Length: 70
Ligand SMILES: [Zn+2]
Image (cartoon, rainbow, N blue to C red; front, top):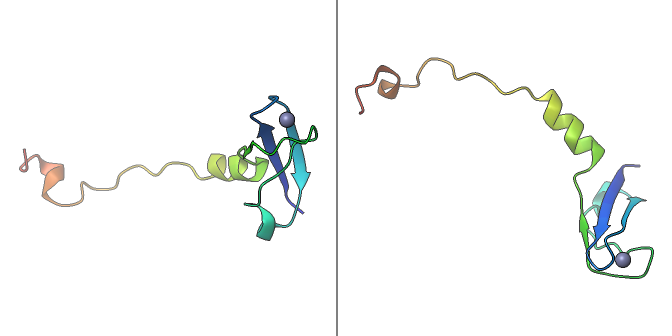
């Protein structure tokens, strides 16, 4: 089950919850009982972004690559 990190905007605490992906967007309540929380980037998402290396532009994609557009 994926783990999600949250931060409470009321007291500043960070905490993590394990929940099904189907409930990933559900609001989370801080351990102190505050409901004003935001979901942080999950470890899964960060790893995925790092794996997806940026692709170099290939070619020039039409006439803009040759400078005739400017
Ligand atoms: Zn809190």
